Length: 522
Image (cartoon, rainbow, N blue to C red):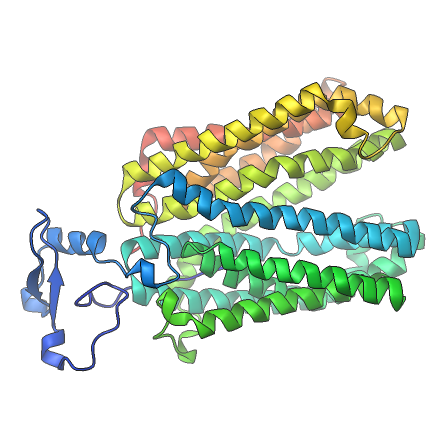
């Protein structure tokens, strides 16, 4: 998860916006700024004094043409080159990061289950849900920061970039301290609200206490990885996550299986590995800051800038609301589903794995698409931004159709990987059409989420958050489940249909053309 901020560009430089001034050029020579001719001719010199500013059309051309030398840096320029190639290259590390997280979660549960039994599983499950919910601020503001950074990159606004990153990191650090302090005070009450089983309560409390103390690492890593992804680098975050996952598994074995530290040991393993990935990412950015146009950043830049914070909050709040509301809605729906018996409750876990699988591809391409759309909107290349959305759909729809075909043709073989219980299998066979709907809906919203998030539109992100996260998801689930008497299948159906909400909202936004005027950096 990531958070970014970008301050404004103070003045255009003689070469590319991100190029450092040559020390051998005297101050007077630096006052002259070179802008490419709009008609494509030789670059022309324009004085930088207030009395002799460049004409607006040349300033616009400068924003479009004067880019940092991307080949010599860690920044990827998505405003030129093959769109599908860029999308695949940027999405692949995101996809494998998501896959790695799923594999880790399964491994973690196996280790805890074998060592601690059902009480440990219950404690880690409940504590994990609480810990995941507490990251909604970092996920929302990091996602917003990634989009804003991408727009500043597209606009060539170096000085705003540094100011924004400093603001975002400082703000998220304060948020993590606030969240940890408040949640530690009320952790017991939170677990009671989750209806934690009495026999697992003490273990869940221990797990939650440790993870709440380590929120600063989660928030910090999400912020830094957002900086890298906003600049078009998804490979390094994948490497850092990979290192953290393998370290986490090793520490799980050491703390839980060998040292017998219980659920607190599992939490400690998670916090230590998250801290390791945060420090690794921070050290990398500091060591190679010149690759990301951050070589002029100083400690004094890591403070909260009011203008930058306002932009971050306007976009981050709707994203955080959406993340939190979806998680809360799913928890409410699952609580009703669990009331229909053990077989239904057991299959709910399998259904969650189906949903996770659908998010693997759509989530990765949606995140990558948002960064590419953001850069191209910042550079005012609107047709290329639209082409990016279409490319996202071509890929995610193809993947959704393939997954749907596999689920439709081989449901028993798939579900038997999890259980042989005949009652659970019967529930699963009835779920198959809903599972297909989940795959198609996940692909349908991927392109529109890329557009809405990449545009940086505060209003559309807020509308999407309320409709998708609360109104439609809860409303449809209870309408089908209770109103039409479809019971657990109705709850699953309502949740699946609600997944198409961003598609409907996004299509209206796209066809109106207002996304071009939403939020432009630079």
